[in-house]
Length: 145
Length: 145
Length: 145
Length: 145
Image (cartoon, rainbow over all chains, first blue to last red; front, side):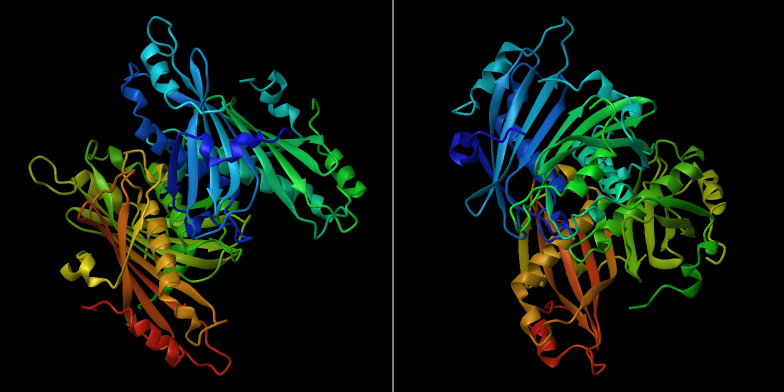
């Protein structure tokens, strides 16, 4: 089981950051943030990042994109009611897909990383990501990616 | 982004299977099962598998184990209120860790696979998985794993 | 705080019943089904009841209805991974609204009751519930309601 | 179906207020905050209120209290990713129970009210709420309650 690279564990590596509130619902029977709750927290961070990055104006309006893969590495336990900080940016970009890479922090500690691969439907001509959309993604690349 | 091997997409590869109900809560704004809901459904399948497999009696009582990694590959969209079938078994077993491999089916189609790595705390002598516990895991190995 | 009437605590009072699975996610830090999870379980029972009752064919197609009020009375603690049984029927019917009354059981014990009031938008002529829709509701009235 | 009193719809009536983040998970298929998500949001507001009010130091340490009743009145639809404001205070106080009254606001509009009744276990002598605990509750009464 390969673990996340060291550079992934610093908030400074990511161009976008958001404070996200935890909820009582996120706790499991042991009193920690549950591992499915991590997925929900990362989803919240990701949709907020998408909103902030405004990628969908860049030649991709009306195109459909779905989550194809999600990998979470759990590094430490989280607690309620403290906020977490979710740091996000763009990783590898392919012909029809791109990675959204994120990490979650609480009290200065990295709790987890999350790598999501998004795939966009082909356009009517069978094409992949529009150039303008790729240029938008490039602005949000992780510095060390 | 490597995709799941073909043999992972058949329920027959897995020694344990459970019908799991979907919930209205699992739907996203597009009317499909949300990708975080997949993680919750797989968690339900996994805890039911753990219950059925009764691994914790095998020399590991009182030991603590946590989810270290989760990877979900999304292959098709799911719907409500149809049940999903979650098929589960054991993958690789290491010195202190083991994989729980699962796949989700609906209407004969594989919607997703989920690979989770669990890590057990060392015992007082610094030891990893007890032999008896490993023997218990071996009974639930995937046939092609 | 008025408590539910005794007749509400018997599954026999309700015309529709469904077995609903609990999830690991439903547990709170004390190891019981969380009170928000009760609301999600009741919602699952309610949407399954709506599906079974097929009310929306009865002259109300295209009309919009929203939950206006929900009251849950918590009577006993629930556990995982046992199923709950949710029993459901129709209570009072007004000019534009109707009640869906439900109760949740586990191991023969009533865990909670849930009363929901649904309100339908007026039609173009300012009318309330269509007569045909009311007749559909009447078929699912609770016997003692 | 009695609706909430007018004074309940103003944040000024409540002694405690918190900004609570919404999540993508809170959305239903119509793109609004789901009614079960309202219950989770109110629970988050309530546990944060309990934390801020520090009631449990007031002679009640070790006593157990459970949610006995929850009533939510839904007044308007909510949206993501805007925050909601949850305003909270204490309503009626009985021998063994008390009400936590709350309202949720977004963009200056009241989306819902939530009335929860909490019941405390008797102490060893069969007693109800300790006097010191009641005094603590009194500090957080709604001004118009």
